[in-house]
Amino acid sequence: MTSAISRAAARLTALLPTRADLADLRHDPRRDLLAGLTVAIVALPLALGFGVSSGLGAEAGLATAVVAGALAAVFGGSNLQVSGPTGAMTVVLVPIVGEHGPAGVLTVGLMAGVMLVALAALRAGKYMSYVPAPVVEGFTLGIACVIGLQQVPNALGVPAPEGDRVLVVTWRAVEEFVGHPNWTAAGFAVSVAVVMLLGARWQPTVPFSILAVIAATAVAQVAGLDAARPIGDLPSGLPAPSFGFLDAGSLGTLLAPAVAVAALAALESLLSASVADGMTVGQKHDPDRELFGQGLANIAAPLFGGVPATGAIARTAVNVRTGAGSRLAALTHAAILAVTVFAAAPLVSKIPLAALAGVLLATAVRMIEVGSLRAMAKATRSDALILVLTAAATLALDLVYAVIIGLVVAGALALRAVAKQVRFDQVPLDRGDHSAEEHALLAEHIVAYRIDGPLFFAAAHRFLLELTEVADVRVVILRMSRVSTMDATGALVLKDAVEKLRRRGILVLASGIRTGQRQVLDSVGALEPLRHDGRDYATTPEAIRAARDHLEWAGVLPADAAGQKQKGVPNPATAPEISAEAAR
Image (cartoon, rainbow, N blue to C red; front, side, top):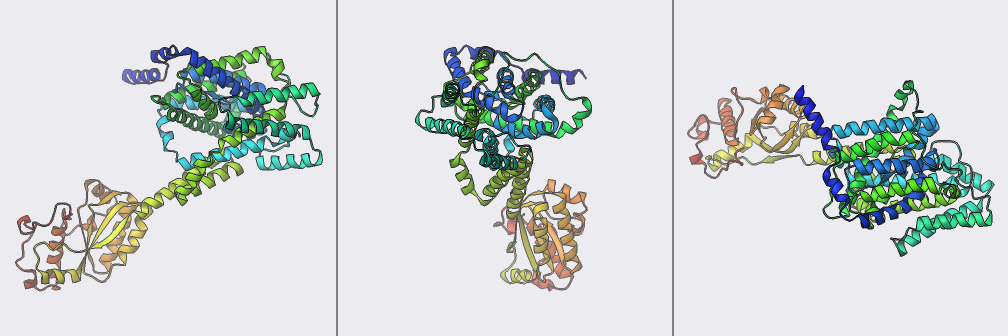
């Protein structure tokens, strides 16, 4: 009991910030403060936009960026990660808002945070690296499309139609715009998006998003454009902690959405941290600490009216490019956003929704890495299929189903590829100490097959078909030393094949069975039919000698054709050309 408590305490301690983290804050504070300011400028319109898109309002996005951004920076596993509301999370939250309302989103965020802390305690962070790259690229493409489509109502200046399917909502918004066009809103959205996209090509380090939003707000205020609907009133400060969640009886219905939010937060955060590592030299994140930090962030953010948060790839990339070297940059970003909430809420409330829609449209376009998609599509047909299916499922269904579909298809195609590696080849009999005439006579009645690769459920039935179609011979020798792995299905199929051959009067012998394979074969009763005279054979020459003895006993071979018979293991001195590997 004491040792278990000690192990749990040690595991918890490993997830907490260290002195080294504090020392890193003092390494180059000037660069970190400048990087944090730059990220805050980039993050402000994104936080507002994603808050609006989630259905909880711009204030929810700001609260998330401040609270979750600060806690994830302190307790997370990456020195460079910037966390907050993201487009991918918005995609998952919209249906929850539609079905359960704002209280449902806050409850889901809290539940997801607890799940992330549990995953961190279980050290599950390392398993996220097993998600195939085509699945990641596919859902990133799908998310970009969904984010772009979600902005269509605000970009066109029409009320958001009811519904939780983005394609349906987009179509209804376009129909509404055709009937009552709002060219002012459309102009703002297109202008902001174009400025961001062209500006990023011209001067990547300049925060054109905030400049474009400021310009759009100024034009709307000076010209008195009523068609450019503003965000609306924002609270001048973070709301006090609240516990207005759904009652315990509703938790069961929110379990599946909470699992989806936790899975997405874990996947996107760890992916973002890996991207940050790849952009730097000497930085390496701790995946379990990152899950722990994101868990605490998602537990705290709903208490202040925030939405679930994740590591944000775009903001993290800006952080790295502007020279951040420690967690101070992400903390600075959160602090500046907090000051903005307190000091500039009246100004922020005047930003046109169409301008924020333009920011998110440009963000969606920039999420699509054409080069990566092209490379993935050209890699293999399987990779291209996984990418397309995941992206389509993200667009038509939701992100969780998309990831599940991508993983299932990727797993099935991987099994298919592994199964194809299994080879079942007829090999010539080792000549050993046989004369040419004796060897030719034996070859008429004995056939040897070598099995290469894994013999498991995905390849077993093809093996059964090939083995049972063996020509009319008297003895079959299975050389099994090169079987890399075997499962119960493979063992059962082997047993079935051996019994079918025995019913045809064909003796089946085996050589080179490894210890691990022997255990599997014995557990399903497949080893007994492979034994001859109470045992199977360690090497192929032993099996050939036993086969020859059987044929002599059956009268198929004349006694003098076998030469001087020696029972048991052949003398290596008489067959020096047979290596240890070839003998199996």
